[in-house]
Image 1: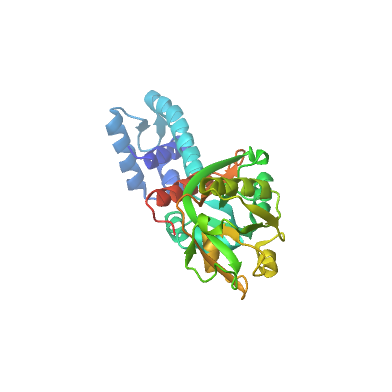
Image 2: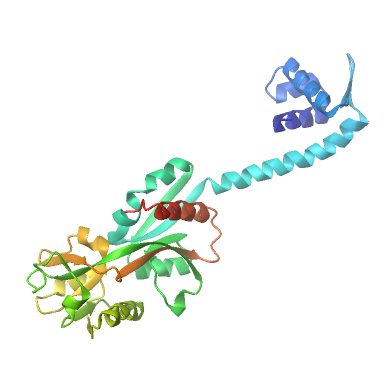
Length: 298
């Protein structure tokens, strides 16, 4: 029994006129009559009394009308809900230098599967993205997991592990290497940028150093990765950075090489405010995590 037949029945039940009902439904009168007959045949009873002059509902037709009204209403409400989940806008925060690695190479598949969804992006520093998430100014973010008491209102979905790199001046003693391990940097000073989450990042990397028996000396220089790159000298030290920064040219005098240690990585997560009700968050997270599970993320 097709839902369209229910709707046609409701129009005819309201106007009790085949000619008017078929006109309102933009269909032929014989077509409407045939559909009503199919309904009656499936139900095993007459819904209308018909003669050459009048159309009336039978008692069964009255009962069916009342039930069909709810069915049609529920169906239309369901359609609105489904369409609401498949249309609209999703605002995503992404770190400036992580756009290509985290999203640009894989987003075409989501857009093809959800053609009515508009994706909007906020490229920014992680601190600004977190602030926007907490204010619910963006719906979702792709960020390195940050453990901080200030972020209890955010929900994290861990996606994949990103290898780390080491940034240094091109004249640094280690710059000629293709890769380094933590043990190679036992006598190095480790450079960080100042941010609300510096403590969390330092604690995270200190765990790496403890595993390798490295007694890390720490220095804060600058508030952005670009500023740190400009201030870095051959004797400044080294900075442990996300793997995607190897693809970025921050400065002519900077070298970025691989940190060759499987114990050292960033956990890249999808995160959103626990009170954000945008229905597009769930399908995007599921799509992203599915690709991550298959190893299809860059």
